[in-house]
Image (cartoon, rainbow, N blue to C red; front, side):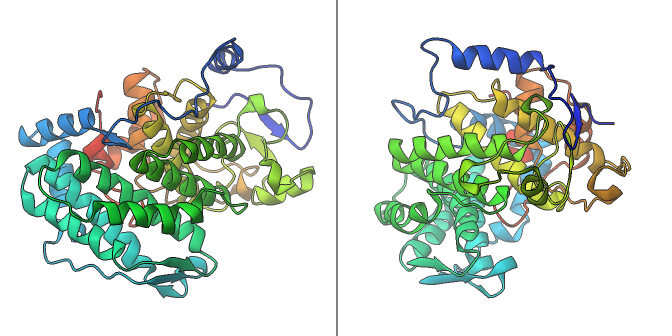
Length: 403
């Protein structure tokens, strides 16, 4: 069974228990002069979106030494369609995405071209073969020359997904490639004018939307060195993370995002997919399906990793505790533990996706937390590939990476 701190059914008395980690976090955050964990750094670190130079150097050394699992992870990347040297970008001036990408006018093309740009940037760093850097630039240039807007109901989410991958690629190319990227300024303008306005104000939809949007906003802010947008995105991220993953210390009901007006138990239960029993590690979308819960968990890990690279380590705060518990809870059932009747009516829709490496590496390898079920699932899924939306190659970049 998953490790849980408390189980709340309907309206029992609030628990008086809290984990030692939660107590330490509360003391730290309330201490006089404690820094705001969401504050932008005085000087941004580059490359600094989800993966750092030290992490890239470690990855490169392991791949070049033929060490596993990194060599196998790189081989999977190199053999993927995202690294295809004949890939041709398919940019559009207007990307139109309805619910579940129907209609799909450029949605898949945009997301996958962005992942391909990141894929080629990683391949460049590992191999130092210039063709990969040039392909990454070619893809970024093609879109920055054409795209003007995103439309239809899924526009915010689509922008968040593609906008999460573009700055990861751009950070590596701009700050490690010694060749020419003549249109880097145009690419920055694209991120500033087309992507950032669509994501920075968040969303009152399901939590994975806003978390993905904040991932894009944080990454774009790092690339643009936009401190105000970084601060705004990080503040929204902290609020949404607390409302996305339940901890027993939250009380009988989950936290909420104030703008959503979830002011009754019935509204909260409805928003949590009809789940009225709240246990530590449950996410707002666990009872929808594990795939969407995985999107939210992955975005939490990505933002926490970017924040750490930028000098503010959130893994020792409530963000890290929520990430740890969400990973452990979902991993337990993904590995085959039968769902009890009180959880999603006893029926789970699995499919967590390749989303555990970043959080597992930070919390287990760096902080020494056991995370038995997350460890099993992570190792079982290696080498992790891409979810074809905004997650890619994380065994390669974060698998047992000490940096």
